[in-house]
Image (tube, rainbow, N blue to C red):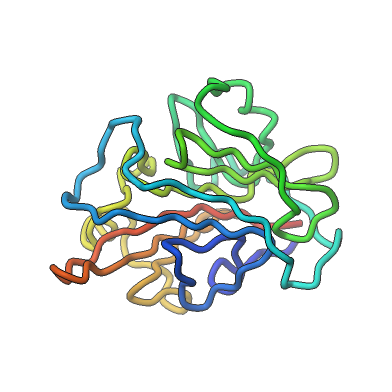
Length: 221
């Protein structure tokens, strides 16, 4: 079993800028985030970001079919959980088990080159025009949920954290982040075979620091 280090490896970056310590691989997530005037989560289904573009790019990790997604039989109980419309979405579980539970009108499904260098292609599910994204990668005959990216305040984590929240709100929900993998801009939390990455941005006018994006990431086989 191999764990993809969320600090040194990710399929995505946010806000049009590379976060410290991250490498862009086969996919790029460009999320043009709007300034958040409030710290609370918005229950509206309308995304407040200006949209997300999924851009295919050349793999930079030199992998070609060497890796595979992982199906963790204990992930549903041991990993972080993201819940959307009553459906639990958990990294390192089968995407096939939950895909049929979503209204197909709420998401766009596209295929991309595998972001972890697995044989075959990833499936990318973009919900509500870019409010959040699920990336499922090949795991043998199945598809494993590898990443879940929350890009605006219309969705939140199971613990109630969303884009626009403050550092104090994040710490109230999750405690102190993993020290050797975090800094003032990126908080890393680990649970089971899942990693939760919360990135922050500072408003140029008010100097207020708030959550810019949230990503769940799984392990690879």
